[in-house]
Length: 360
Image (cartoon, rainbow, N blue to C red; front, side, top):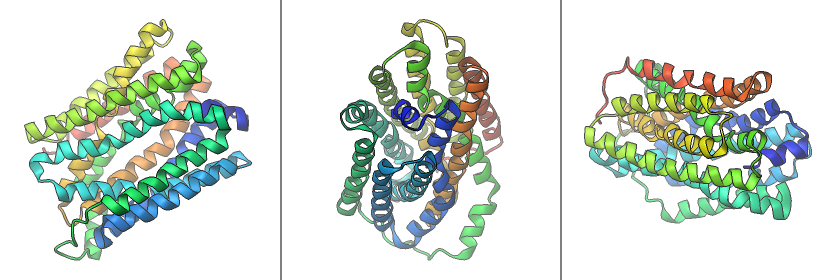
């Protein structure tokens, strides 16, 4: 939502904007697995509260960044601290719900992403218009701190694991080939998700002339659709008692959606917007199933470490995809960028086909 404002303030190219969007994924590469291991050892509440508080302070500080480099560095460290949410909240839900309800529960948990995206799309253009980037970053930082306070008061600890986490548990996490295939295969779905969501506002603003507010409203609708697709994917997964099959279906649908977006890139807005909303909502449906499958592969005692590993894989791809997509668009065209993005979920669909079914 702030990409046009960032581009104007720091005089950025489209590739630079991609680097800024990638920056929040850099820190999690280093911290996601440690956060997951810490959650396995000390519980979820402490991890959530400390990580979110530090994240909020750093995000607010980004409003005072005078150079593009300092902005990227602050956002990278903030992302590393905020990554505490990924492993800790997933681990909590894993322990709270039995296998027959876990896909749905983690699907609901994963709606945090589109709900946050929708709220940001509805509020940030007005906040930025009233106070500029500094106030926007303070606003986002304050939300993180409030979330930390909510976690401190509302998160119910699931108790210490029956067995203490040992060194061999970490070794298992890093050596389990199934977890590597699952994490890499589902992570490739980010090609579709990032191209359709992170760049939607810029695309509609630059190519179709929509205002920043109007483009952000489209993104808000997309995020509401993603809430539906994530919950539905979890519910279907539980009903089927399967994780991999519905996860692969989403990969095919994501590839088709982003490829259709490439076809209609220069069509009228009345055509482009519905296609991108539906395709984007589908492209965000997969994450809850991937987290559920990773946790169930590991078992309860090692679920935090497994989720941390799975999310680390996403973070690595999350660094590469936005900058790479922006560079391709800048050097070729939006149509080419969207078309190439469809390859990611297709490869992911193929890799996931090598896994046996995971039913919890």
